[in-house]
Length: 297
Image (cartoon, rainbow, N blue to C red; front, side, top):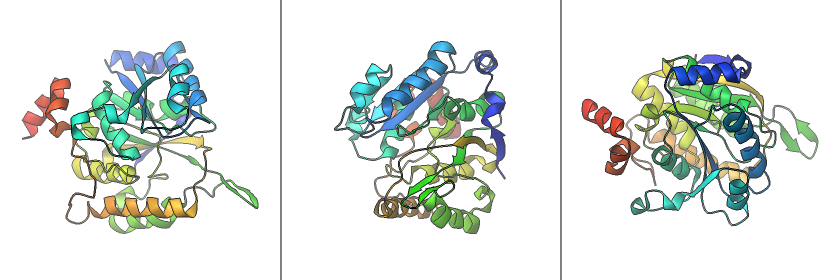
């Protein structure tokens, strides 16, 4: 069972920043986006004010955008984020659509020792979505990857089902984990988009460019480091837009591609990017990674 926390455990931001500085850590936040003009300005503003301006928990806050056709990039920049097009990162490696592409390129673009990810469509954004996942990594050196979990209300014609979200998790992913990876079945929200990880963990992962990215992270983390490095934090409730059944169906297919690419004999899933540490450009940008690659060769 992954070690569990509550976001309140890390709500003393002054103490958390002091612990971060004492450990000599840098923390980077990535918000991957595609057409999030309805929420992105508030997401950036709330997190920047609390975690960059008032308390320097974050050393950088970057929106990596997939090519939005609305005002997402403009609004994010006006709110104070650094905004980068995914297609402009590692351009010689091409550009692909998908959330996983943004996260893969974030490992190259961001400079922190701890990388934190938050989706851009959160309607009830709060700093806990960051400090709740970053905190365990600062306080517990043995952890390498921390997922957030929460209640996810489902808006339906009959009203609000307070626990009706997370349909793909309950119908598809949890049964797969219970059958093939029971040591990960205790994760409440294995597909949550809010999580944090150490650079030396993320740089080793091959990453699907699709919605299979989150399940791929977990399986690769377990395979390379063991389930004991994975933690999870209760973030209370997350409100975001609910997706149609057709969208959930496509998402499920992408998750299955990533899952079976790693079980029982891993083969590359369609469109999968290689581990970031395998790129010469990455090893040049982060010399410590080059040394880690040399030692593991």
